Length: 282
Image (cartoon, rainbow, N blue to C red):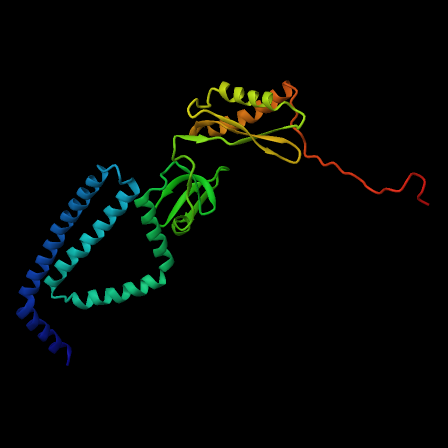
């Protein structure tokens, strides 16, 4: 078939099907144009509805809005493509096989995605919380669907995969308004137990940041190898935890020194038995 014959056949096809193709193309474009406005409006409406809920945080709101947008675009294409005479059934079947292959290849990433969704839904922590997750301690800076970004106490940026977080113990240090401060104060075996306890109770009561309720607990907890140990357990606001911890340690040392109470060093008594008499060793 030469070029003239090809051109002739193309002209015949255009005369026979051109009008239908033009109409189909116009209908396709109109559906896509109108659909684009509908998708945008519905996505925006979903975002507004989610933002009104106190149970949905910003990350979950953004995720649901994005998923809604993608689903609406897929539906729009499934409506519009048949107008061009495209059979979408084989396309859907092909997407199913492709989805299985992609899912198998990216199963670790999908695991992080699923874990991220669980974190967002259950909200064990929020941005700004100080937590211990996946063996790492730090302040939460960002939560997305794949990983959580934290800042360590020494100001390092750390990204932890969500699967490591959700599959491990999560400790949130700032979830509650108050925290108990746990201290141990040791005195010598020759010191006055009652006097030491009274001093510890007074130290806790005088500190401005120690809460009155619940009241501090000061009790003798252990007779150790080198000291008699008191457990000191005051309560403080979470934001004041480390201030109270450091202040009380310093004040206990100063108060014990001022009142003649010994904070003993570890020590060991060694007894020798059966040593030879003096001068008997040749």
